[in-house]
Length: 126
Image 1 (cartoon, rainbow, N blue to C red):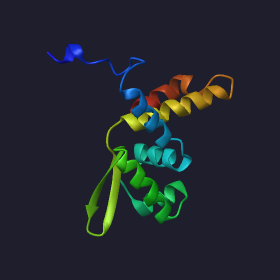
Image 2: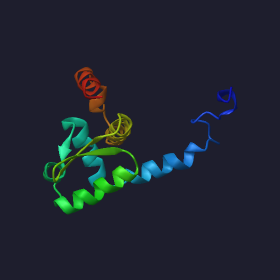
Image 3: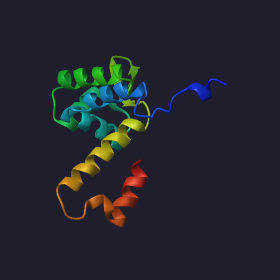
Image 4: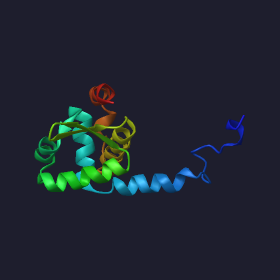
């Protein structure tokens, strides 16, 4: 089997390390993080609705969505002249959630996600 010859994706020498860095750089933009959070919460949204949610002009939101689509983080569904976006899978949402959790730790004190009620709410969304 070839599976025995393949390197684990989480090995420091893995071929996926550079791709993971590209994914992190794609998420190194507040608007794109807000888009991921919005799609995680609302599911499928039109460009105009997403633009309203993230506080950007539809053209700007569309440009960010195009980048996320090229990175295969979102998919698009056409309905006539309207485009509806959704997350491709749960991984982008998990990455953003973990980054938010890490940010909560940086503020000191007990992070909100460590509270039992917050943990249950996060499990429901994930």
